[in-house]
Amino acid sequence: MRRAASLVALVCLLLAQGCPDGPSSASREKTRTLRVFAAASLSAPLDEIARAFEARNAGVRVLVNAASSSALERQLENGASCDLLIAATALAHGYDVLTENVREFGRVPLLGVRRPTWPS
Image (cartoon, rainbow, N blue to C red):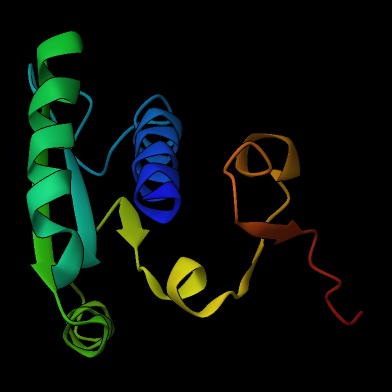
């Protein structure tokens, strides 16, 4: 149960982070589209979260593309556009998330977060 709550918190955080910077749709459009790619296992909760997000954010449409991680990877490799990629791998396998945004992601319980140390 705690893991599911953590996942929902992470998705909400990611949606909130993803939208203000400008989704991939042109800014001239009246309705902005936020394209979310996510693991198939997240389809039902993401659809619910997307509808709630749209209700609170007039002019934002959330399109959820739920598929296996490998299918999403192939779509991206073939030029598909997405604003937010949510794969359940990090939580499911206990992997750390590498991000410069440690403060925000650090709020998600059970999620290991650390800054990347890229080679120079």
